[in-house]
Image (cartoon, rainbow over all chains, first blue to last red; front, top):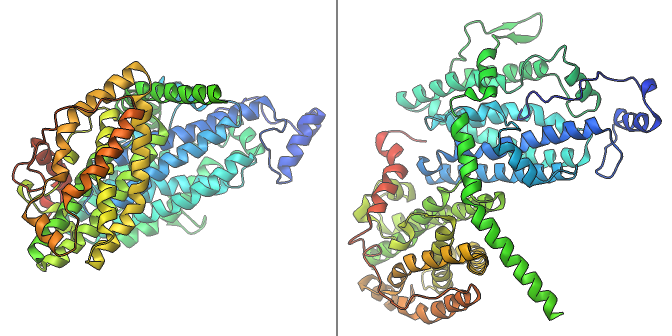
Length: 330
Length: 251
């Protein structure tokens, strides 16, 4: 899940009877499974919430290039290098679709970028963790993209048309990303003792942060209730986290790796695994900017933007000259 | 002939490998999102081409080496890439100027290789030329846009051109390897590509309001492997570290 802790209006969910006719028609359309399109009327809260959510998702894709880009120049084979390049390129592309989807709500990509660079808008906490060995490329694909898919597959049915359509394309690519991550893990886990050690170490370091990707329990959150009523959030955080654990545990077993949770066990009655919650203090620290890589990630993005200013200005100036020449010729 | 062909294929594959590495260093750090995508895409094409050239080199050599073995288990003196492609990225303008100077040669080279008497060489050239046509188009547009942009972008592009021009001449120098391949109808005479190259880059510099340096002095030693720049060793310490630290692993 690349959008965490999205705050909505917090007014609580209104019943249909409490709504003015316009809002009532809007909500009924959503309830019936219809899509809201950019030119349709929508409540201001819905628009603001979506901008925050889509923007945070887009920023996560952009910042997410960094921990994986970290290993492109050190990839172990030409094929792995090509796959990783393709994956990081896909992520930049996802950022692009998502910024376009956000723009349909009346906010510019430049504005969203400024809000990311100033720290006003967030990106997923997971990208504030370092990638230390090649096995981390496996763990990121398997667990991080795996967790993202849990959230994004249902979002293909989200009520906002442009977001839902962007998600359809994104999900196709994400499932390839997850498979390539698991494929790296298989090679490592069945490789030399050093490779197996790298694989276990990567799982140990990424397990907790991956569970945090779903956000804290949102059982009693009015924000979540409103987002769910608007169908911009399709499942509760706990529901998705449980689904993720249930799916990952047998995959780890197949790899011969140990999930770093001594209390993890199958609960027959619930039909799910019982597991230990991740360290939520750490999560809030990371959100506050105290994760291992927060400073570096934002610095890297700010540097790219600042260093690139002359390029953007140069290309804009050239485009303006061309337009002027074309006008003069007409 | 097979020694010469092996050498020649390493030159092609090492150019794309080293340039692909350099371009991939940009990942996540480009001036704008579209450029991040385009740079990753270019690097991806170049790494794909590397696999084709170096796999064929290994096959021609017949010593059981494949593209990975050649890419990750040779040292500086075995590399046969042009000095141009190992030059550091510098700013975005320098990266794109290096790309343009290389692509303008690369596309001419590949088009000539499409007529090679060696069917495998011709096939790789044909596949690569489709990708490189796009690389050249983008590099050309960027050089023109930035050269004829603001005062600052113009100054930066002129500085990049001045810095990189001494690495252009090496692309057109012939040696025994070239002579043997020309004789076998496998590859073009490097000097024969120069007039079209000069015409193309002159047109682009004109549109970009850039001045081609007067001095045609050329640094040499990359393609022959006799004297690389200091930069290549640093590229290899990063590119080959994992393979050399864990030589018994498969990935």
